[in-house]
Image (cartoon, rainbow, N blue to C red; front, side, top):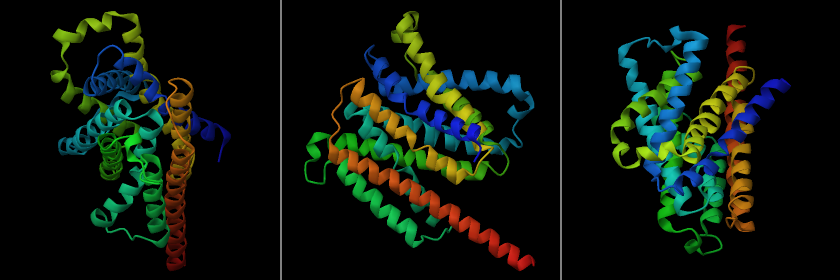
Length: 306
């Protein structure tokens, strides 16, 4: 793997890990989770749109009108839903716990892929699902037996964010047949922004954007952990394997945990740390297993051709 690609992927993932920092600060100004989702979608859509217009305006054209269905899936059913669940989980629990629960997404992708794409549930993937389940139990307090530290509602929203993020991978799998990952991201946030814009209470809270502090965190949320992170990550992705890139993104929960503990003084016990380690290990195991199966498939194909 090239050092530059490696650095881009890690840096992009690290930027994703700063989401909680922006969200927490916006909450202090009376904004709700859904309003923060709207702010993220709109500011990211504007930045990504400008970037695409500068680098290649032709890429903003849909190959077919019916393809908008892909981006309704990624934008509304995934991005809006998962962001709302994640931001609510951050509000109800802690940044580290919410981020750990978000990282159950690969496990949900495995489960959904069995039914939607008829993918085989290998022993490695089954083991990864089991490790993920154990990790969740540690993070939420079922092990050693005190879920009250987080709360059932917060846990459900955290798991909801994992399901929502998994749906992004599912819908993207169809869209990737025609569009690049950067195009998918841009169209996704455009659809999400258009869908959310009519529901933002501008009459009540529009004046908040006149405050430098709110404007900084609103633009920052759409720029750093969203638009810039995706652009940087996409560049790195083009120069390495997707499985390796996915493994490197596990730096995100590490950064989020550091911010939660050292910036906001949020509690995070050694048991929860163990749970996060289990979930991250399961992500790596799933990606390693997927990469290995693809490698075997390529070798089999070559043998058949020969």
